[in-house]
Amino acid sequence: MIRSLFADRASIEEQARLFRSFDHISVLVAGCDAMMCGMVLHVGVAALRKRRVQLRDSAGKVADGGDTVTSCLLLFYAAECALKERVLARRGLRDTSHLEPTHDLWKLARDLGLPRHLGAALKGMKNCRAAGQPGANVALADLHQAWRYGVKLHVEDEKKARDLLDELISWCEQD
Image 1 (cartoon, rainbow, N blue to C red):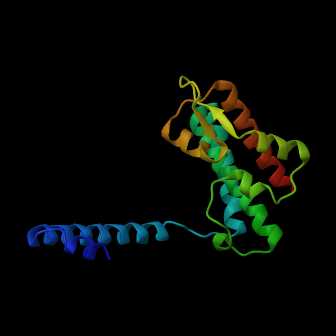
Image 2 (image 1 turned 60 degrees about the vertical axis):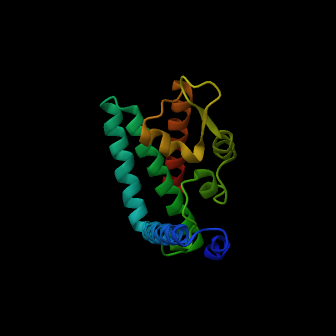
Image 3 (image 1 turned 90 degrees about the vertical axis):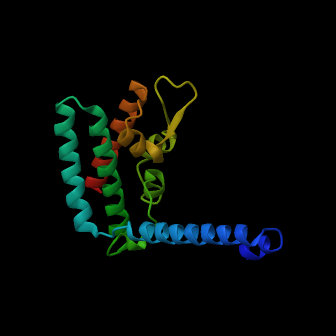
């Protein structure tokens, strides 16, 4: 279709160059699609439970060493594992292939029947303020990226997020 759009207006040389460009782009896009499809790994309840424990333990050790940002990142992923584990267990599903690939903790938690205070805290934690960037916020679903890439957050917001993650994990462990 794209080729026919240019066929009338371009010289033979221009058409050949454009066609090669379109062919190159389509190969790149197809390669990216294949890579993206291959990036999702599916794991079961036991693997999620094991990883939750490992990540939470590691977060504690890293925090003891003074690296709160890395600790928060590990807690985020521990909470994600904990929530996915609970969703799978409650729905009687074998593995994460039955779930939408997401890092959005609110999406994962909303069907679990969290205690009112925890659900409200999670829902209220829509954004954390980025330090030194007035008006810039990081959504709860994107906190893992902020911590992974070293975006500085307001100390109070980061502590609130860390405490919430810890509370979510604890609730999942007791559920």
